[in-house]
Image (cartoon, rainbow, N blue to C red; front, top):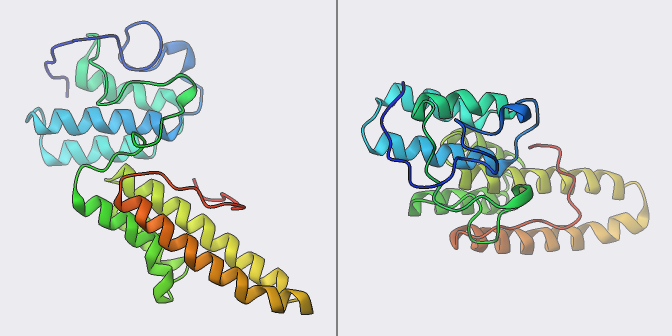
Length: 210
């Protein structure tokens, strides 16, 4: 549903004004930052009362699951039509790289707690299941929770895989407890980073889930 908006700056993205990324880039894959920018626009439009909850959930779902710029462009067109689009709450950065502190910004304390839970639930014995629960339960509506849940899930999967490989050898049996102690420490650090709205990347992690 198209609504009214007061343009204040250049268009969304890095190119000339348009309802989304440049039309020539419709087939390019989007980054997490691209999705999060559109999510911020959708949230702002919903807060202004420009559409109801059903339309909000639909646009949010499409934005969070978009794979190509062509998937995001119709959402921005529905919000703004052919008008230039005001910048997202934080400015675009070349290459889709977002500075620390601006990436997947949490809007509420609940989002910060949810993101922290994705890192800390494995310490309660849920291992990969904890981050997966947070990803499925809140990842579709909160980019902050999604980013941390995906990172924690990938780390736990990597940790489980490494454990299976290491237990084949005697040396591996000795190293496995140290590996899990290090994993617990990293999970705590990740939880604290999530509470502080910061980013956290686990070292030596296979990122199978995106």
